[in-house]
Image (cartoon, rainbow, N blue to C red; front, side, top):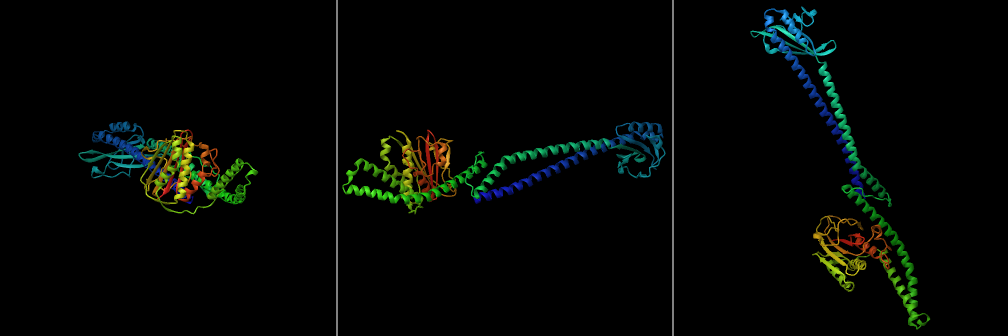
Length: 496
């Protein structure tokens, strides 16, 4: 449980990290959109600048002949034709001293432009490009020389408004912000949706794990997925099932220990009375049949009390090097008669196993109980399959049979994990006992290892509970897989 809570603590850190990553992604998206906007703005301004330079170049080339002939009327016509272009605010021709010779506004003729360059020696200094304002408008002005015999003889100046370019930039900026906003909202919605799919069930698992760690035992864990989250849900469900089972067994064990001691004294007295009566020749006081019936019931009660004591007390294991295959063979020898009488088929596949450290007597009682249950569950000509195998430090999945050795294990059967999952790094011996009998109803699986629960008419419900306890005390795991009408598979995993 502590390990699970540590996992969820790391998960919360990962959630914070994920939020930081989402913030970084949004920031990167903002940077990309800003760079895109800057690139588009630069491209629009460059296009506008190129257009103004082209207009000034056309005016400068067309004005060579009229300027040589001092034909101001033709120069005026050229200036007027340029000024009629879209966005052109001014078009003019100046002499080398900066005096306006022609202008699209006649009132500007003769005006001196002191800020223009004077008598440039080379044409490499041109064009001169300037940004400024005209009547509260941002404008772009380009000055070009009229070249005659390699020297400037006059200047042409074209001024264009940037209003249209700025409107285009604003529209592009708006579009970029709109795209960025939609992308950000879509990304956040997608992240929230995916987060809901992942975080919500994990958060629920975290709260369940916290409640379990505080002592809650009646929490119901639902399996809502078939992926890693589903595996976590299944692990937590298995954990709480184990906690519930151990709590019930502990309480029942304490109760049964007290009851067993209370039962033994009167049972012993009654049994002694009947035995003494028979020995002293007083059997006539009651019929022999009645006496035998009472003695049988007394013996059955004594056996039950012995099993209760076995269950309520912690076993002192007598470990020794044990060959599991020999134990299985001995159990099958003991059940040879019922196998033959009921014409049951036996498929026994005993693999090569290392010896394990275990209590032979207790393990034999477990195998005897499981084989006996399997024989009772089958009709005539049923099939019993037993398999043993060694797993070398790999993740155990005992319900999946290697190479299809067990024909009674179809996929999709419901399963109930009776003990903790066996550690995957441990070497282990796996024993599988399968029958094709009537099976166990799925709604009974949760109670299968509880004392006094039985699906048999004459059972006392202690066999599987004792088997469960014995395997647990050996540090092993037990699983059961069953389907009504198809049979049952018990799988025992024991450490090497």
